[in-house]
Length: 141
Image (cartoon, rainbow, N blue to C red; front, side, top):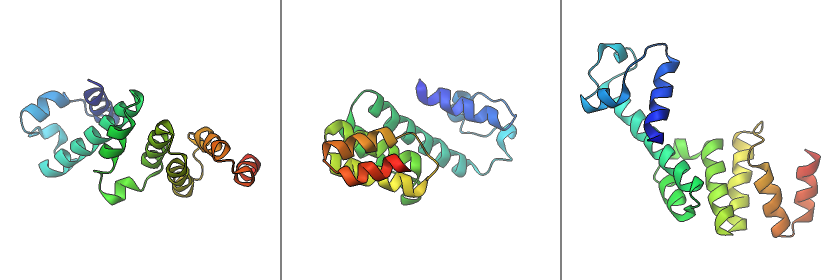
């Protein structure tokens, strides 16, 4: 259910309204989305969105192993985004793997330095790992 809501919300961004469920059920042949790209591109986008939503849902249900597995099925260019690294960091944090959480959250900071979400996890992971210098540096940023 959450996946379809996201697809429908994204479909509204372009100004064209269409029923995403009906389009997928009918093979995405609508002239309303002809300008978006080929059928294959739209299917690829929907699959990518479904994977991201599935990983997010796993994280929301504290199914950290499943979230990590799902995220690592993404292509490298999508894996190396701030949001995905945040989801990985959150999953590792919930598993108690603070070293791996720090790696992912530091990568998130490099990829999206303006991103604030996730810094609370990074600071807490530093605290658990007793990395006081890094914690103080993060507080100064």
